[in-house]
Image (cartoon, rainbow, N blue to C red; front, side, top):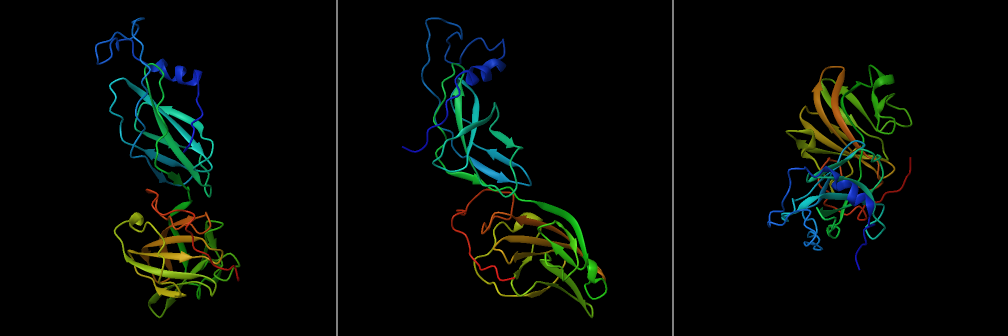
Length: 278
């Protein structure tokens, strides 16, 4: 047996309180309060569910159920796919935002449809999990030769640090007019090429690692594999003689390649591994 949803009993009835007074009839012609009419057919399982991970939140989307007497949806979460699913909330829409999600945690979600008589369908079948991660916009670091105290950036403190600080993940260099993003010996960086938006790069690449320095180019996105087996991305927005301005995102789940707030497509269990040598 796959998963068993926690039935919410009175909570389902409470969720039905939003039924409008002028909703007097089902579409099949039966009067809602007809004592001779009893509906015990639950809606079909929800299909098309997927999660969009953001910074401290997860947005869920799914396909609307086809039942004429559909009243709404109950949204559940768990810490594992085959675990016990707890009610997160209810909605009439085919989307829901989990605003209590924490960065760096992995959440499993499922949705069940219910009708006006309180019949709740099975949980959605597809595996849906998400890992919210922090991100930032318009950060700036400076040429480490001229300004060593502000030449580096730390994904762990989400802040500008000295280029040689123990928490520095990468630093900026202006080498006679040619600009570079540099990382340390226990870290790797890849240039993913020109991108139109920050979200064009969804996953960390599986191959091509080993570079410690890449040319910094406006409009390019770079993926960094940190010393402790986490991934980050940086998209350069502007470069001057003394600084680089960029957007960034950092996946705090160890080994997870997910770098975009988007659909989960690669199993978090299929993660990369590296030794912490720094």
